[in-house]
Amino acid sequence: MSPALMKMWISFVAMGFMVISVLTVYFTKFKVKNNVIRMILNTIAFLLIVVAGLIIFYVVFSGPVPESA
Image 1 (tube, rainbow, N blue to C red):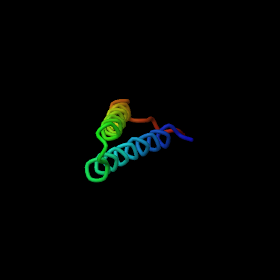
Image 2: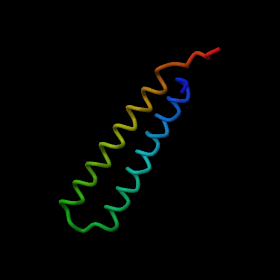
Image 3: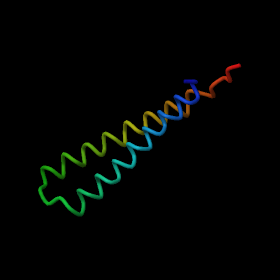
Image 4: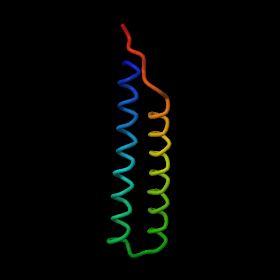
């Protein structure tokens, strides 16, 4: 697998983390009544969004991938 294709899949994982984070926050806001579970799920969502941001930071600032011949 080429480095450019690998970076694409890594960025898809980051976007998936962002979607999971948004859905988790939505779910906890409207469906979960227990404050302890709500806090745990919001912490997980926060960690996912931070990890996604770090992954995107890596993908964007690691520079262009040289073409292979």
